[in-house]
Image (cartoon, rainbow, N blue to C red; front, side, top):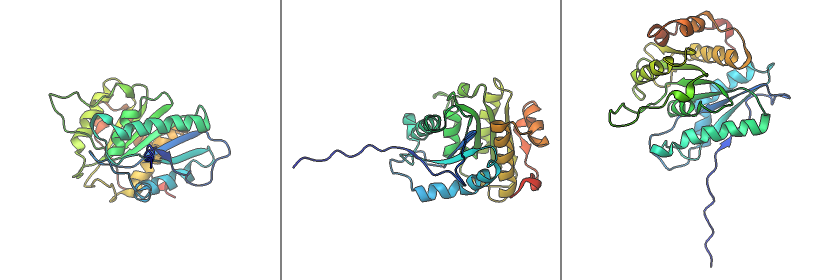
Length: 253
């Protein structure tokens, strides 16, 4: 009796948050967190839950502009060394957006290990902006090649990190942002003081900042003054910008 071949794993896009736009004018791909090493398939329920609040917020904020926001469901939980599975799946997802919606601007928005995937896949020609929330980055090793940043040239990049993050070292995201800033002035980084990896203590402010950045980069809305200041300020000021309590109160839904 012949054995059946195990079907190859494939990544997929989740359903659009909110009503499906009649005409899509831009897209956000939400990249959940992951693990450094794992061959297991992620739970789609857990993955969606980690980015649901941001997805719903963007679904409401971008309704009139035709924003399509999808969660990317990875093939594997792990980054898995040189395989960089999460980044590869992010690149596949951008290709899928282009296939579905045509030539629209795309923002990659990742949390934790998904933040690393967003930064790594940001070189795709359809990507106009990258948002990395509490990005997990590998410890610096003089014997290994540093995390690449050249692919982010020409993109608008926002990094947000809690100063008390015990899972993803905020100093590593600062150092990466400083390297990106040398070749790309459209980079800023906000610090959420006393917040941890999940950025839950100031969730309202973080969501408002994400909305401000993504609606500005995808549809040309004016950035808030703090984001303008962070982009214009030289390092380290624009890369250690404190996220003020109450930020974006007028934008909250």
